[in-house]
Image (cartoon, rainbow, N blue to C red; front, top):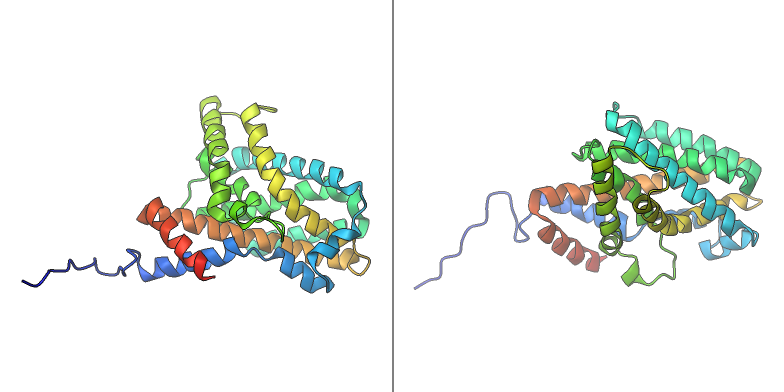
Length: 276
């Protein structure tokens, strides 16, 4: 007796996902597993990003670490206060133009302006990330979604020599999951953002440790004599484009998880990642 094969639902392939969903996931994998800022910077200045780092003085690391934390703290405040009002979607080009302008100042005046320039750039990028989240069906009034917007800054922070097992998209999400959940619960219960709250400090610290890698690359590229003010603007344009790409990938994955379930999406994501 011939075995009957159960037909797949119309529009689904053997993976259990619709072709358009699989195509969107494939694009997300490219963005999230191969973040391109280092390559973009190397093409701009004509040298590998590892050598770009030599342009920074030894004292730069503390300045960058402090500015990175301050930038993320400012972005978190915006995410949890202003974005809950759900403003009208902004223009991605406008966000890039604003970030480019702030980058020009960073390129012209160097490391000294970073504590001022980076929080401005980070808030502009956060706005752009929020617009992308909204376009993928996210509810910005949900504290977990707001935190997921800030989480994007941790997704591209891998050094070229980093252990791949510690830098994959789902690995980073897993590392941040508990912190995101605790912080979201804290915010939902309190209804306000408390300065210095341990759960929020822990979340910012985790994100900052990875965001700082990308900030260092950006600052080093802007510090090169051949870059200057004009190049600083171009570097910041690449900087915000980098995080827009990551945000689109991240919130595409989350949208597909709502449609197909987390288990299936992760299985297909990891299968596609092996092919790249």
